[in-house]
Image 1 (cartoon, rainbow, N blue to C red):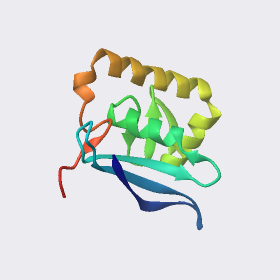
Image 2: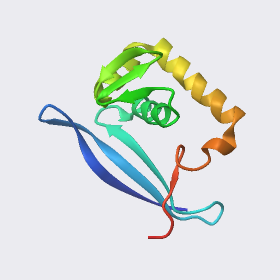
Image 3: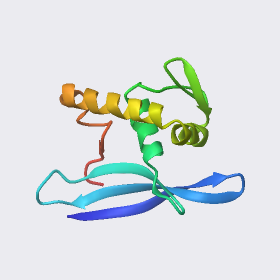
Length: 126
């Protein structure tokens, strides 16, 4: 397996860079379909952001609603902007665990519904 990892953009807090939005693409794979792409945040001093991945997946599955810059869960606004929503989930681990469980239950119950586009994108040969 060969994976191409690239920095997509910098994540900033004001003028300070606090992490990178990263894109990983499987360019060669003999045991599974190649050309899958995954986007995730790598935060300095923290590693891969679990909360960022959770927000991306929950938003694409419409568990978390996005209206303009606001993210909301069950009608309650959890943050203006992605970074504030990530911080909210860090502070409220019970809600983070609840969203995580909903995602897992949905993927187990209806895996064919989310094979492409939600979990990983297929970009074909470029």
